[in-house]
Length: 272
Image 1 (cartoon, one colour):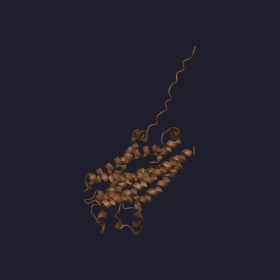
Image 2: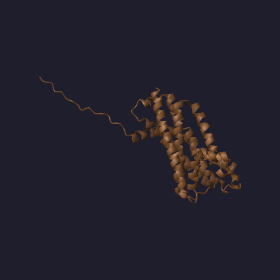
Image 3: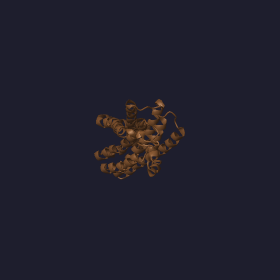
Image 4: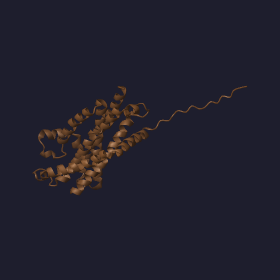
């Protein structure tokens, strides 16, 4: 008697696309953020503190000769917007450190998920938070009396500039976290970068009133680039050449640092 042999076709498991992987990673970080609402609450309350604190402490600066406007609050809002996303971005790497400590990161790296998706998914979630923060800053500023002559388009452009700045510093924080793998090191490095970036910029004061050496340094500060875009975008007359040049610089910086954060992820994997 002959034996009938049935040959079953071999099926190759399909791999999700890069976009699908990134969306799932973003969903994972978003769900985690929702389950810890205090973090999102702090992210939203922080802009209120910035506006109230600096808006009142420096309100009389608008009367200084050479300031250019007597409405300090309107001048301040773009700077506070950029400061807010800057500080949020500097802490973005803490999520990766938590994953490393808990072993989640090692389990993720044994899966076929793209390493760039692991970085991009977390970055997208951070940028979503920055959008919420940006809306809060602009809304609170308007309630406090700030006026945005650029209208809705100008406000949208300002938030877009803040996202480029946030992307650069979120990626920087992620890269440092993956390389240092230590919370204390991340806090120290972030502080060393963020504090000088804040005060060696035009976020709180026009360039004309800054010391000469600060003016020179501020020209190369990404926080200044983003603040300048937001200020001209929300002004009556937009300087599109400034928007184009500063926007290109921010995009180049964000792309370069994002590439570094993916390289840092691969470096971490090779060290396992």
